[in-house]
Image (cartoon, one colour):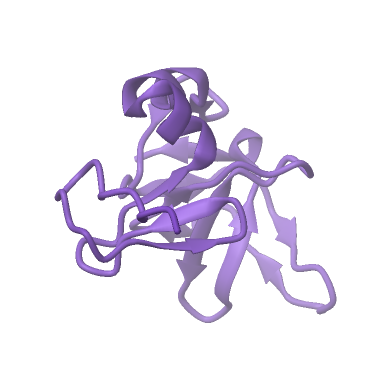
Length: 118
């Protein structure tokens, strides 16, 4: 049996795997199999998310929506100027690379081309 890897952020031994991510329940850090193989710096350098104006985004940033966005499966619309706090960068095949919670809507994923860093 292979030992689970330690968290690269807090060095906790209590990490667990969820699909292709490793998760640390103590600090909330998530890292992929790529980060484990290449080292955490190699994976971080390969995955860069920029907003509509070219500014680099990081986990925990606050952003503002720059275009009315229809919510899939609903008649609701996220209006221009809506502020979103504490974003989380995610790797996705469909182009939605920001995970967040929007007040009044709940958890959703956004595309970085429709937001700007606050």
